[in-house]
Image 1 (cartoon, rainbow, N blue to C red):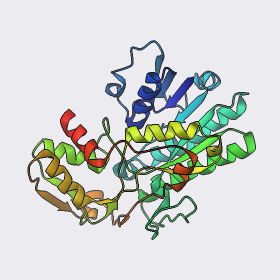
Image 2: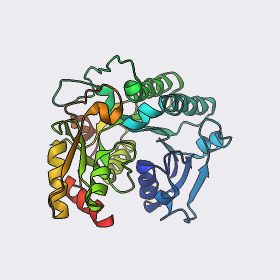
Image 3: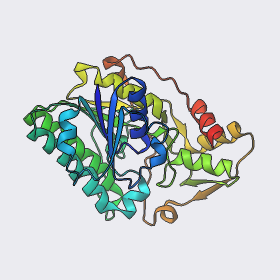
Length: 319
């Protein structure tokens, strides 16, 4: 099978590339290296079945050829992270929204109809009071005079674009609303809490917790995410659908800090930082984010292989 991954040097994209190479597939990736790194693909970039193109999806002349070559496309060229949303809101618009539309527009112009796996985000649910977030829940994005909502809006726009092309141009698409994904190759530079905590613990620095730490999240290992996406791609009933992908076991940020302290074997001090000090704007965090996975489990045989503790120990052991 021919696999094309946009954003293939990024955190999840590089794991997808590695997975499919191990499956015996041919993998081509494109990345402009704005956030992805060559280190993420260093373990497999010499394989004959692998090709890397350093380019921007909006201007790359090889895009149509890549589309026509592909059996399956994972569109992971996107900007993520709370700090990126604040510091580069225009980049989120151009990369996430315009980039997504450009890909589908170019596919529509060809006779090829590869399956497109489009990652969305749990952020589209916004400040939803539901304890268990379902794909059919109402989406709530706050109206704010600053760009914190830009990322959620960009992912919701991507969903709308994909479904429009699915209906009008018959491009098969599966939309996966990814919840907090963690694992090797993830950077803490853009606000991601687990790699930040792991780095701080390994360097004997205090944990920095934004807010009071009572907010909860549901973390899923990237290797489980990759497995789930592959299983969805093999499910004909998933085409044209929006599916939550992640782990439904909740943990508060304070409990996460305690768990990492226990895993590393010493009590890491904690430094609480008010949101305004962290982000430079007034901000109210989402109090909880837990996915309802019934749809995923109905469509696939997916089972989690990585517990949070196992992932943390893996991250700590590899530094």
